[in-house]
Image 1 (tube, one colour):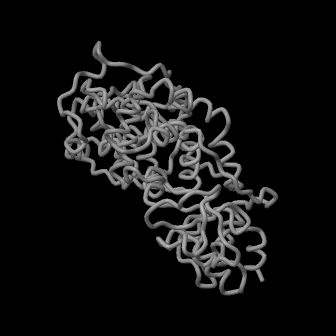
Image 2 (tube, rainbow, N blue to C red; image 1 turned 180 degrees about the vertical axis):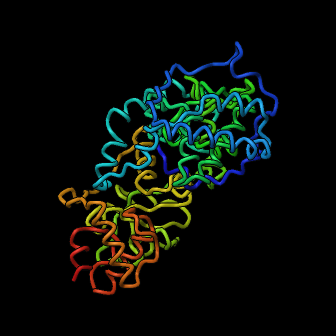
Image 3 (cartoon, rainbow, N blue to C red; image 1 turned 90 degrees about the vertical axis):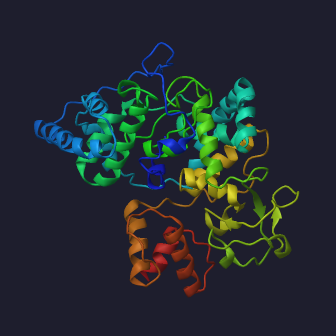
Length: 420
């Protein structure tokens, strides 16, 4: 399941009418409703003070919810489930001591078992996937890959009840306003009748269903592809979830008929200063860049990224790769989707070699790199140990300043250079 999508959701809370789904719904608990076979996870006991504080929040938040258009009956029914969940807070505070190298991430993301299951799902669901592809222009293997990455093809949809989880996070305060908006969106979903509070299940952070939509993203992008009057991403039937994923990618820039990109070979003495998502060009072929394994380079303009630095594989990424980044703003995630899709479709995986002997950096070491880059004037972002585009561009700038290959890749060697 993929929590980072919460940071890029841009849905407007009141945008139900723009979702493409009918405004009149059959009750989610009625005889025609298809329910998930997932059993909700129990909520651990909370400290009395935490529970009392949450219930005060529930009472106080009611006026805001009603002012935003949530009915009193919807609010009262849903929030009867609201309890302080200490497990949600524990997971929210958890931070891995070591960052996982890209190659280990991709080993798991594009595992043999995930490829095999993806091909089985392709054979099983090909007719509906073909209709989804025809309508939205997103290849079926990419839709399947997102499903595989997000919930292991529905096997890990999340067992936590969304209302208690979001209420806990909204009350907690660390990112209270963000989660209050997610809670309002979840209440609007319930009011529309797409599901009921008991069956609205997902991750600890509020991501829901087969392809892990946050509530605000659901409101803006979810579709009723089956035509049963509900945008159902929770039940055992994945059709609406897969179509909603394709709709999301299409509305976020997916170009019909184009690939996401390709693994490439760089010529000798290639200017490493051109690496990075900020440098988009259409003349890579004239510079000697070749598609790995032969064949024409993908059409259009794009960038070249090297997520493991100059000693690892290189990838040309176009607009469709950036569309995947809108789903989850992580290069590793987008590469996982891209190459899981390649393998499901029967095409080769990554052929270049990774620097597997590199020592992983601890969180404190990654934060130190950012701090030292900031002290030298190369970095202006948050000191959080998370290496996104801004940090990697800062690393490249520092590397250029000391005359080493500016590949933007953080290593223990880089940290030693910064310490000197």
